[in-house]
Length: 324
Image 1: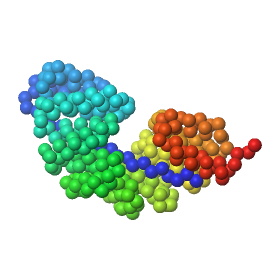
Image 2: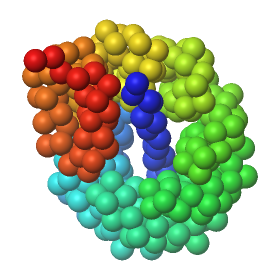
Image 3: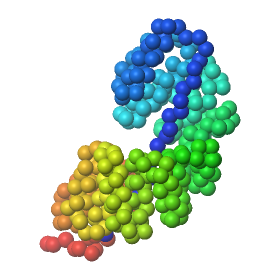
Image 4: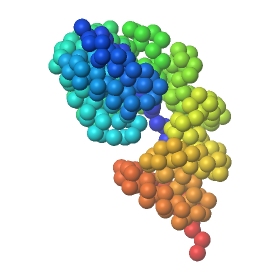
């Protein structure tokens, strides 16, 4: 049966902004209103206010940085590379105006990672650390990029430093758990995910990742309990639906698995792995045409899954030959 596809959920921390010299009253008022809109999730409204603030004061590094944060978050939400590129431009302008502005380097690293410029992201995080050696978020985020590059030992070293600087840094514990799991240290990963949960009981991603690791050890009951907790905290966490679906498939609950995969797709319509897994369940249930539609959609979204998906399809067909 289909084993859990474990997905490391690596979130990047937005570092706090810093004040920047004299600010005009008008610029400050628009920045303040934009920040309030940002906090409420009105990213487009926030960006409009930051635009006006910068018309009043076009040399305000803090305003460029804050607009960059809003563009970055909107870019991630909408999967819009134009917003991400604009965020990079804003962070760069903030750095030009305030060369020792460490959070701007760290956040530009986040945006560069999001568009796939991993080496540039590492350079930005390293510069942020050079300026502000106590910036735990920069160590965590650089660790995430080393993880993405497959350099797990370097990732763990950065997570260690982030935790040393901030002992209750839930995200760093969760990310270190992901790196340890990638190295095959399942027990170490579970310990780190547990520490993450102890540091932040609302860390849905840590429950999801611990659940996937428990399933990899064959403990599906505990794993599904963790997925349920993750979804109680964040009902829109598509990865938790995907992983719970895989656990249900492994325990022969094919209807439950298909339902979870469908929910993951509803939340993330471009979630290639969810289409792949739902297709495999449909194939097991003899619904070949629907399965093939899911496989086609999966490969359009991520052709890199082709070899592993074809292998799983072949295994299922060999085990359950199609009726003629």
